[in-house]
Amino acid sequence: MDAGKSTEHFIAALSLRALPGVGDRGYKLLIDAFGSPGRALTDGARVLSGRGDGCENLARLLRKNPDRAGALKILEDSEKVGCRILCYGDPDYPEPLSHIHDPPAQLYVLGKFAPLSSVAIVGSRKATTFARRTARMMARELAAANLAVVSGFAHGVDTEAHRGALE
Image (cartoon, rainbow, N blue to C red; front, top):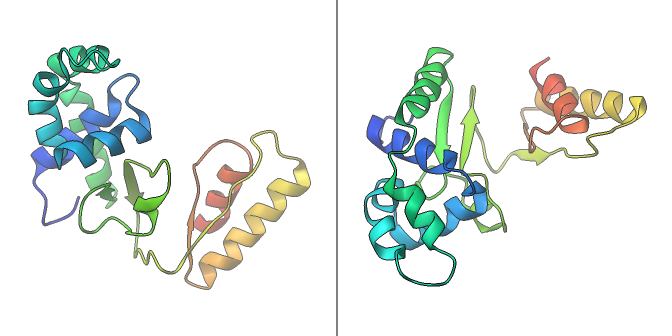
């Protein structure tokens, strides 16, 4: 958790992202529209109701109580292992990443995070043995050179890249 943000901010962010159908793109649109996860949760249903452009389902989801217990569990588990959460729209979120089409709603960071010193390793979920070995070796070498290794954490190449970085 970021020392500059409240527990409620992170619970709202994690709850909002966990709503069915929101996804990373929807999260980005809601934060861009409302300015914060808390405002999206408190004002979203009222603003989106009756628009007639497919927002009624989202408004209905926002009217329900989001999964605060699940969000709190994620927050507590993250704190236990020293994991810092960076949320899209927050000042500490990597600015270049916020400009992609589907920026991750949250980033989970262990250790030092240097967003300008990072590399993404992504690939097939049904990767060959060679691709998995190569991704793992490359990530290990890049992490040893103090580069942050990032990916979508899908199975296959992405998973092996993270394993290599952790090694």
